Amino acid sequence: MKGCGKTTLLSEVKKILSLKSNTQLTSKSDINNPFDEDKKLSFNSQFFNFSQCINQENLVFNNSTGFLLCDTTILDYYIQWQKFFSDKERTPSMVEKDDLLKHLFKFWIQTYDVHFFIRVKLNHKVNGELKTEINQNIDPDYVNTMEKTYLQTIDEYGFTCHEVYNHTSVDESAHKIIEIISQSQEG
Image 1 (cartoon, one colour):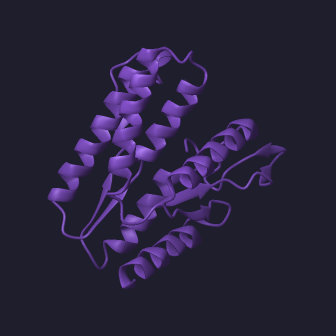
Image 2 (cartoon, rainbow, N blue to C red):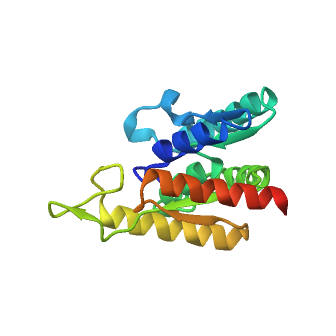
């Protein structure tokens, strides 16, 4: 979810994991998205993001023998698409587009070994404004809407997703993620 501190947190995780193993971190795929801001959630834009995400993960993973950490995953782009699609008329064309992205999502989400959901604790205030640990302003309505959509999607597709709240220090959250990764390797 945008603004929850994923990039900062994953950079710390990468730093720690890199001490013992080759660790790569993918960047956000939508940075190079050529679509205008008002069309960023459209089908063409989201198909671009899905494709870039998969391509980037494939390229980095094929050149890696250790860990691949993904800043933004197919789940993030699928959530964006769902938010866009929920406001649209269900024309046959839109339903076909939704089916295509849904199938792509269902296929690719299985390729991840461990899923994390970085949650925002909404009672963390600084000078009367809600802030994340990395000191960004956050919109509580946006957070609630997006978290609800993430949780519904995770439940609907039935994959395990480990929740990590960002109200602790970056170091504490990074160590929690590393602990979960270590446990998943043992199991």
